[in-house]
Amino acid sequence: MDHDVLCHNLGTVRGRIAEAAQRAGRAAGEVTLVVVTKRQPIAVVPALRELGAVDLGENYPQELWRKVEALPGLAVRWHLIGHLQSNKLKKTVPMVAMIHAVDSLRLLQGLDKFFAEGDEAMAPTVCLQVNTSNEPAKHGWSPEEILADAEPIAGCRHVRVTGLMTMAALDTTNETARPSFARLREVRDELRRRSGLALPQLSMGMSNDFEAAVEEGATLVRVGSSIFEGVNP
Image (cartoon, rainbow, N blue to C red; front, side):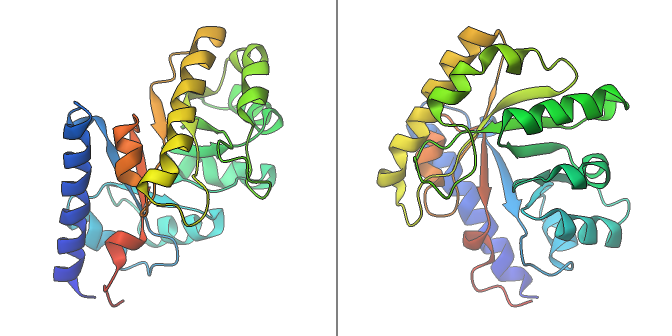
């Protein structure tokens, strides 16, 4: 693995996050970089840890399981950033610090029941996925639907809903993605008012558009390809 390229890319992304935060009058420390290790070999995980990257994201539960089981005891925080099926809850939940893509009231209520029957103190936090780009293929509540569900969302007492998550439309740039991010922030503020939940987290922004996401209030950005570009396994 080309450790020097990985180090350079990671430093560049961190620098771009810091610059975007500064433009928005924010501190760089307000934004957590989640390095997306999807389709990357297991060996990349300890290399990232050596470079100080402790928040790592996987899209698919099976790939998450494989990496976690291969690296027992490694001090990283795993994030599940893709769709989670109910039949994969039992194995996935103990492995992750956060689930980013709780995309329906049914899944949220299923998690609430699951955590009520287990150790709530060990439960990961969750973000609720909102489809702010209005693409039919994307999972998640529409902005209107999630606001209408404010009361039953607040009624889920055993799951720790910590914020909202979105993905901009495919092939966006910083500027074309910006409206999706601004919309998520607006929805979060209104859902906060209706539900009484604090909702401090906004998970938004990927390799093509994370700077706009930071400028619009992201607290978590999910970046993969910009970090692994030119890194040979």
